[in-house]
Picture 1 (tube, rainbow, N blue to C red):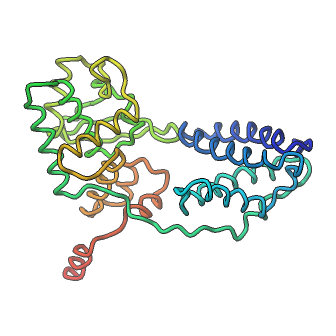
Picture 2 (picture 1 turned 135 degrees about the vertical axis):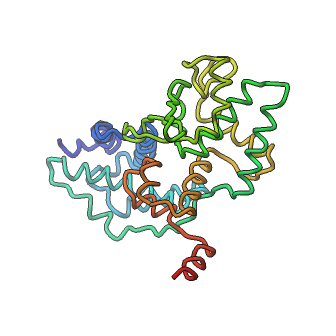
Picture 3 (picture 1 turned 60 degrees about the vertical axis):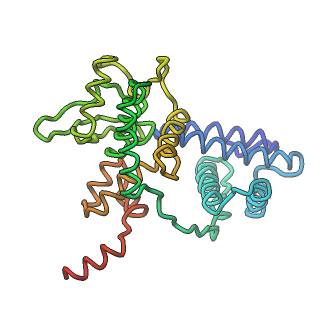
Length: 310
């Protein structure tokens, strides 16, 4: 494909359309596609300021640094990790252009030596004390006289996140009938579709959710979505964030969000010395190195225990 026709914005848009089609064919998640598209459209808007002054072949490291500096000036939340993400997306985009243009233009060189050091922060999770507070709270709510169905649904949602490590997008489509009981192992098996449309099984201890499933099955039937609202609509990611954050607050836990329960699931398995490969497969990570990077940190007590047993 020809590199450009002299209009920097039109040329970048042409390449963006081709690139997004290429990325979409790799079965990336809808959220990933949205992030990639948003970053690249933002870059094109920045290039619009140079319309008539620069062409696509004039884009170099100085141009790229100008874009990143502009992002930093416009947003205080443009952290080192955000900067690294933008560079990564732009690098893959311009690598695509390098590989597919007929003019032999090489953009990969402008990314050399552009490495952003990001401090790896431990993923937030609930402590055992906080887990107990949350579980005690949802049990109390189930006994309350009001909103019985919603309270049981909330309990099921909370426990499913906590004991299976599911992502939000993996839980949203599930129905009561998707909880398949394995009598031999006393667990519920859930077949979920993860990132890249990859299927995997996750498991829930049956004793933890038997009561919730029984009540919801009797009230709503096997085909009821576990994320359905009292008005019959399917809850979205934002709804679930609000529900779970409200549960934390009322339980006396100063934490927010949904993914924190997934992190808690992973950290608990690590603390129990579960094989890292097993944890990786339960979480649906594409590579065990991802699991190791974010979760394979031991505690001081574990280190001392290891020394004592040596």
